[in-house]
Length: 334
Image 1 (cartoon, rainbow, N blue to C red):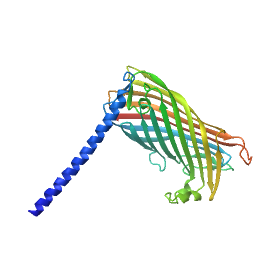
Image 2: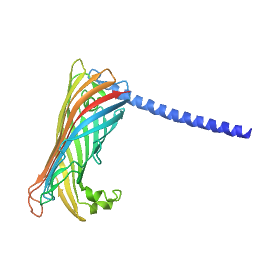
Image 3: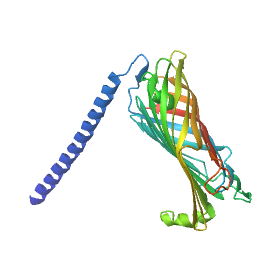
Image 4: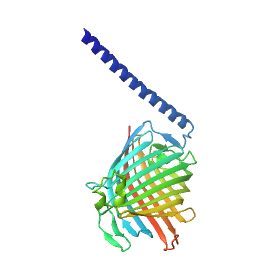
């Protein structure tokens, strides 16, 4: 009898716990639906529509490349050439994460996080590549692929002034652009590029921050702001969408750091030096029904920074980098 009562109490407790969990998720979903409906009520539905689904999954096939040129602190001329990768992504209510990798190759991957709202947009990309070739060092020493690792971090924040223009429709197809529209865009961008000697790096515990002092390493960091314009052209009975945008930027602050044999060399470029960057995008997309869409898109990030003389008058210092990618995307909503 006692055992039966104990078992009954346990079952009632589990049932109550499950009901609380179900109630929490229902309340959360109702709250998110209320916020989405409130935002959509402010939208001109003649221009922007939404899908009747909260989730979408996508498959990627990407071709990307990086070129990096530096003089002054450390002379480098490195390029990855064309790197092909496959990947997957998933989004919930416009908040998405993606992952892609070169098949059968270590340390060649991309990880992305993004969200596109009515006005505000955020994109973050972490890219690692060992497909580098070129020269490095003041003596112009040639390097082989897999000998050096390039890790790049890119964060882009955008604000669209025209709510009839949907960046979400252009970048992720999480919204529907029903009529052609354009908008002035303002943006903030942050980039951190790190180049490591992989022969040393792979022998160290990378969770120990002191490993950097032991690795031949070059780092470039920049912060930029700018303004540009984007346009979505709708064709073919609202099934085709063509997007183009350009945001030139001024780099308000950037600096370079070089670690070599435990010694650190820092070069700062304060406001006023010649430092520019920019992001250009283009894409063509087609959707059928409300569940499926496919598209081809491209993104180019360009950075240039130089000053004629530094405080020790050793000559001109320069950093230039180009990061580009083109990808085919197949999206399914549910």
